[in-house]
Image (cartoon, rainbow, N blue to C red; front, side, top):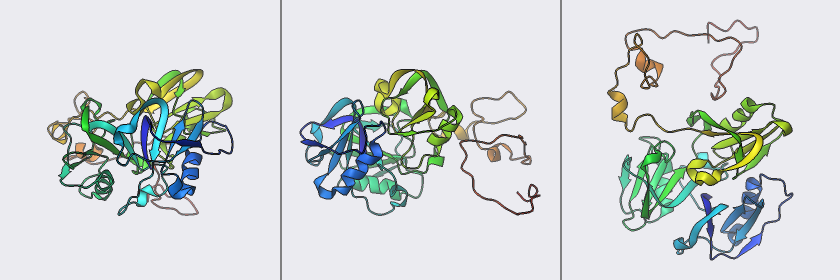
Length: 325
């Protein structure tokens, strides 16, 4: 699927999709029900206010102008992707689509005469010279512009463009998003996609979001009195002010992915000196800062890094493995 946040297809006839319950967090079930209907469900929409979803009798092919804004609703359109799609297979949606917008000034590669939007998405997925995180598709010139940046890393460059559609890759691995979270008290995500129960605290809820695999978790909220973790694939970048609703006793968190630097060249020109006062520039990997020294370790006992994905280095049943690791 492609997901278009805060939109609906105004000319489509809709029918209710039969849900197993009216519990909030219906996105995955709606996607499955539509998928099971095959060609009879070319697209579906979700009403997050009423926790309902609908099968639609048409999609936006030949009627892109019929896709209009509606707060509290998301539009999902079936797409058939070919090629390098391994990372997309188990995702609820593969791309986020924003009509009439583009990422200005961060084109890493431009491909001319691309016949349609789907082909542009496939070029992004198959790009090997850099991690393609987003693409702009021009409906008039048929140019497909690939970028390693997104509307979330470069929000000031996300600009209106009448003939362009912005496409953000949602098939990336969750560990590629190492952005810290920012907190808003007494709020929760309006575009609630799923609920995880029996969560002990906000740290455990953050883990659920960070390593969530069915879609990229953009925001979450911890509801302490019910031990619930609310997971959402949207945030203020996609839903603007409508992303949050007020709820006392619930703390809302969303990823803050804005880059410090506007280009690769800026990071290359910064001189780092560990003997002087630290600056914002000292976000580069330790390897870059240790050209004339030797990498050593700091040990922190009784802690773990919650946003890190572990890979096994070494194991031995009888213990004593610290030196080998």
